[in-house]
Image (cartoon, rainbow, N blue to C red; front, side, top):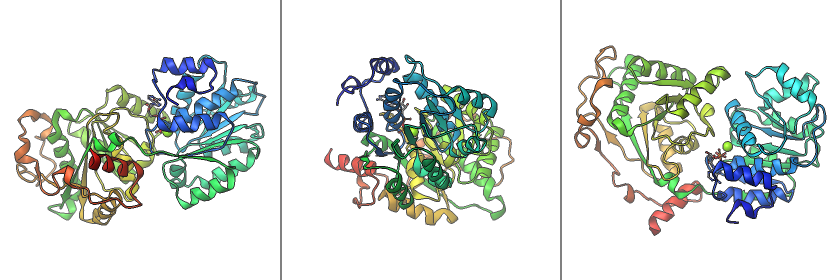
Length: 443
Ligand code: ADP
Ligand code: MG
């Protein structure tokens, strides 16, 4: 299929898609939508940013366009791992269903039970929920899942990371076995394989490699960090981060800084602000209103730096990030791929810069093994003469970025020829990376 109009979608939905400005379906939409429209179960395996949301919302809305909801019995259900993702699905739903009279309820933490209960009582066409909150509602006895015709599980691998698999199993069992299931995950861990074998029936499996451009446009590098003193390691590392940001200068329009721990997300964000960088934290312990505000501000360009944990950032739809800074090497090598995938999207140039301390080295080796590529080391020690303390009030913030002489300060040490660092592809190379390497070898 080349065009959305080739799908057997309700004209009112097609009109909404057109108005959203989408020209043609993405590869996953191309394969998943026709299968879902035929009523088949779909198992979609694709990375973030491939357009999964429309792959399930469009066929769902198409089905819901006929018929009406009954009190307390939602007709469809979408499960998402985080509140932000659920809110994004709800937004997508509103966009595509705007020419139809469909109702929805969003069951996520931070939104009052009472309001949602009233909606459910009246009857909703779609329920969009995080698993924990859905079960809370169910246990209050106000919700029946026996009318669910379509159930969607989005970002299943993140559900697994967050310990939601038992909840998902329980929810599956509360819905009729005749339901249609649309299931999406970036990876197929054994536990996820097991769930899909149990709850999907003869699914159409759609596996998509991310567009080659995504990773090709990302220039990656790593700085090996050795603190001068053990007791000031944290502040030295934060100082290094500021320096890395400064070295990027104006090219760094906006950035996500990833930390492994929530406490570091908070500390890093506070410290950046203290030194005059606009930053705000986002992680699972912050209340919903705050997270939504922060994200909106970041999307609108009012905030330059988002400091995030992996879970909070997973799947967030942030269209244009120029830079990703990995304050820590991710513990799970796959998270590296997710993190850097936040930049270099849709043909834009992106930079991904990581700090690696001694204790991160083991994880770093795993990252390079996973991506089957040596990440160029950069050495920024030349030009830095003040790593003694972090309390000097004269910091880099006011430095005229254009005066920073790149060649001198920004020496690439190893593997600096990014075209020459293809080592070879193994069967464990993530699809989109393999694709990009192949393209490079060919092109
Ligand atoms: P995923 O869930 O796979 O991470 P999303 O569904 O959030 O991806 O889509 C990622 C981005 O791509 C969003 O900004 C979305 O609006 C956009 N998008 C989705 N489908 C299309 C399309 N067919 N054409 C253009 N942009 C699209
Ligand atoms: Mg998504």
